Image (cartoon, rainbow, N blue to C red; front, side, top):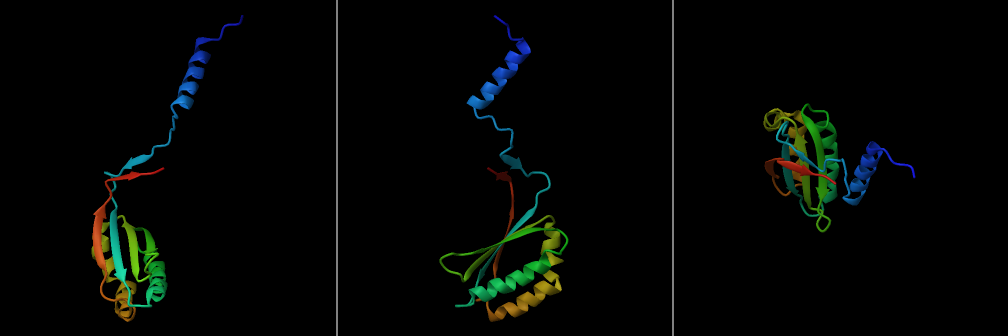
Length: 136
């Protein structure tokens, strides 16, 4: 009978343990304590029957916002039961920029002025910091 070298035996054992216990080398969480980005939630309420107009105008605005420094991403959400409820989930890498320079950009100021024809009022804006992300 042939003997198996100890190194080979240990490698086989490690593979077996990985299979049995479902070892997965992907990190499913991330601690964002370093390099924290600012999360901005913007809730809009549109005038009745103006939901699609608001979404169209937001698309145009976001195309310009994407060109700004410190922009990371925006997700536009529409309430599936009531398209007059719109939520923007925004991520910026500089909160000070967002709260000052971004708010004073010509494209945002133009949107604010034009939005009176399709929004029911000013948006509700809140600021958040990510403490930890959990990913599959």
